[in-house]
Length: 171
Image (cartoon, rainbow, N blue to C red; front, side):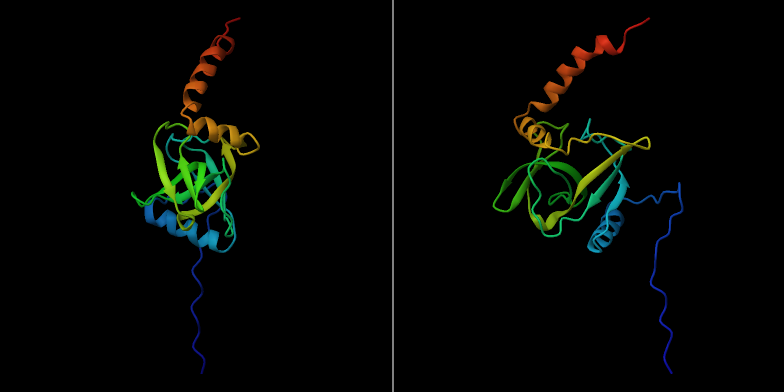
């Protein structure tokens, strides 16, 4: 007599519901989903990638399929020293590994990240239900260069200062 095999566990979240995970649970679920060659969406926490990715934005990660991320790509990886999930931009490559840094943290390079630590790359960012421009097109090269040179944040602050008088006009 054949024994009945228990059903494979599954996770079902209905529309407009969220599953709150962090740390090892989030990393484990992300690895399992990406291993099946499926995209993984989650709500970003923190401001290290502002203004392109902000706290609370929903980001979509896709598997790399053994490809090395390109300059300017935004990748999800397990930080080798902190052993936690981080989403930052590739600002350089060295010997098949990536040099990664957050867009809003000049001078704080995450280090050289081995390809085995990189889970996937960001392909979409949603803010308040709308798709936004995340700096992932051809402009990613310029953003990576400015970030690596420590000029991205000062330039952003300067541009915001120049635009402020036009954004706060009173009728």
